[in-house]
Length: 280
Ligand SMILES: [Zn+2]
Image 1 (tube, rainbow, N blue to C red):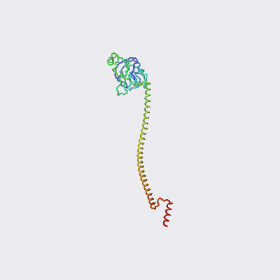
Image 2 (image 1 turned 45 degrees about the horizontal axis):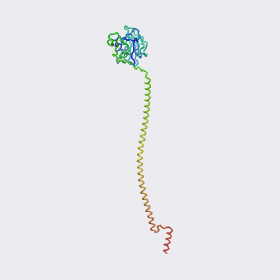
Image 3 (image 1 turned 30 degrees about the vertical axis):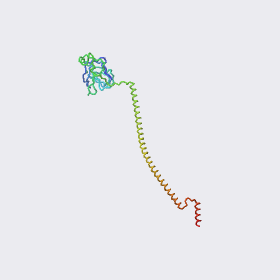
Image 4 (image 1 turned 180 degrees about the vertical axis):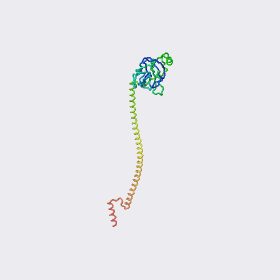
């Protein structure tokens, strides 16, 4: 941030009038101060900035836009400019010469670029090491204490946001932070993808659990059917044995009623012969 420098280049700034407004052809330069200067003396830019315009007349002026500020500084009663509209200027740079008028002075004021706003007060922007003086009693009364400008009457403001080159350590730290942010983003992506895998596995597990449950039910039903079939088989087997026994008993009964039960073929033939001989 920068402060306004000495517009005279003399090391002493003699005030001949405190804040007042004067009309120029373009803008109303409220809150201007008058500074004693000599005829044709060079005046200097109080700030870094850009030349907005130059005019030539008895109230000729040049206006400079301070870098980073939406206001203009006007140097009135000036001519023979060394710079032109659009030029960049540096604080302390010679801009032109003081007009040859009665009571030569530089009328130095400020004006907002937005005319609806109150003009900035130029004393608020000066470097406080500057040596302001005056020979005028009314200015001494209003602005000076013991011959010194009473800075406490003014705000202590800077103009513009002048970028200073960044500390290399800060640049390096910023880079590291950016790298860490990249890593964090990549970890976040991994976490999201892992979470998706976990979710899908959890769903699979749930499906499998449902399948296992339904298979268990099927197995239980199968076991029940098997037991029922075993029972049916057992009772059929018993029934089969009972019928077989009945059949064997019936055959045995039939054989014993013939009286030939258990005889061999030879015995049967012998018996038959015996009965035939008895018949004779
Ligand atoms: Zn003036």
